[in-house]
Image (cartoon, rainbow, N blue to C red):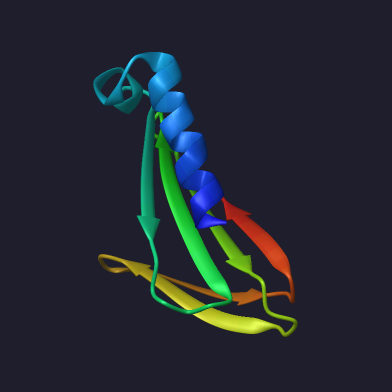
Length: 86
């Protein structure tokens, strides 16, 4: 999944005329932890709302904990799932 997300972001940048014009409405934060079945992507849009996407490509339910500063999110990801938080 991360490769497809990066390709999409690169396409948006090219279409919009570069990084500077893209940063006004779309930012991508991609963090990979080296866990084969788990990926997460965070993005911020023009309205400053943020989106967090968690994927579980494992055949089993997974318990994960995401933290940003003092905020902690504990999530149970169903098998083979994509979970979205806005």
